[in-house]
Image 1: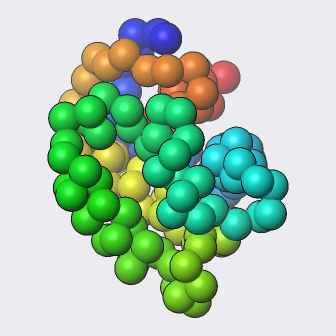
Image 2: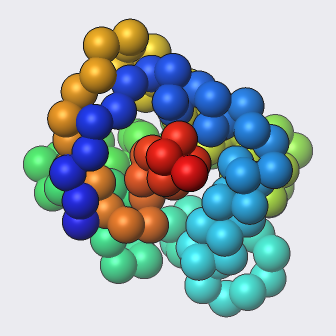
Amino acid sequence: MSVEFIDGQIVTEFVNDSEAFEKWANEKFKALDGDGDGLLSRDELQKRPGKLSSTQFELQSSEEIASLYDALFEKFDVDRSGTIDPQEFMALAKEIMLAKARGIGDSPVCIILQGDSLLMRAVQRCNS
């Protein structure tokens, strides 16, 4: 973990750097794909250690978590296969990160980041 300053522009620039963003998204997808079939199932996402954001999930009921996954799959499972493929995952990650960028805004904020998080990658890209 690391304490970093970040603003919306840093995040947006990282998402718009297609090579760096796609590299991160592909790495994260492979890490989430527990059975290695090239698809993310609801089971893989719900049962993996740490889930998508463990602190936030600890504060939610199982019904709220199920509702979140329902919304996620409804919006991003474009082909309605019941799984998220790499392209759908990329769209999901991009939308989430751009929403975070809008939420952070133009004023830098100080936050604690995990070493493998997308926000950490954005900070590292900016600092290199």
